[in-house]
Amino acid sequence: MDLQAEEGEGLTTATLPVLVATAVPVERDAVAQALPGAFEELRLPGGSLLRTAAGFDLLAAGVGPALAAAGTAGALTAAALAGRPYGLVVSAGIGGGFLPQAPVGSLVVADAITAADLGAETADGFLPVTELGFGTVTHRPPDSLVRVASEATGARTGTVLTVSTVTGTAARAAALRARHPGALAEGMEGFGVAEAAAAHGVPVLEIRAVSNPVGPRDRAAWRIGDALAALTEGFGKLAPALESWNTHDQ
Image (tube, rainbow, N blue to C red; front, side):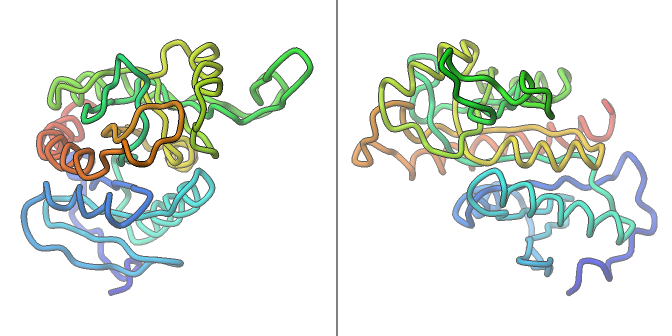
């Protein structure tokens, strides 16, 4: 089915659907396991999404901020053209956690979604792109949405960094913590998803299940299966809270 052929008759602010953007299909499927009912696959330019009768559309947008932004923007545009605009965008997936605040297996909800490496290296250190006079480096989800998500899931709240290169050394981890003392986790897509949502005037949330510590790269220590299970469990608690927030708190 072509998404643009969907009719949006009868949709109101109280029933606007939710777009959930992940990086890869395995993360999308982990979210899908938390949602009841059958799914319908809908075509989009460059990919597809899964739609549930519960009002959640699940998109595996791709790895990294550029693909995440492009995929999310495409889904948002197609939905708007179909008369079925989204009321909320959620960036969901697994990621690295800064110890000791965000241990492996825990959940993190972003109160700030920050591009950690968008800027310039100088002799005096890193300058974010905002200090160069361009753009933004942080998107902040609505406080009420962060609170609802955290209370529903038991997730810690803090800054989630978006990086284009996954941290693999202690020195890099220390540098990120020095620049972003409120950081709890890092991923590769949240800021791209947030940029697309902001361009469409749609609120955004990011939730990450921690699969590994941020620091020296040790794939043998990663717990991807445990993190995906935590994502499924967390989204099962999050989904009804998002529906309530989407209906009453906007």
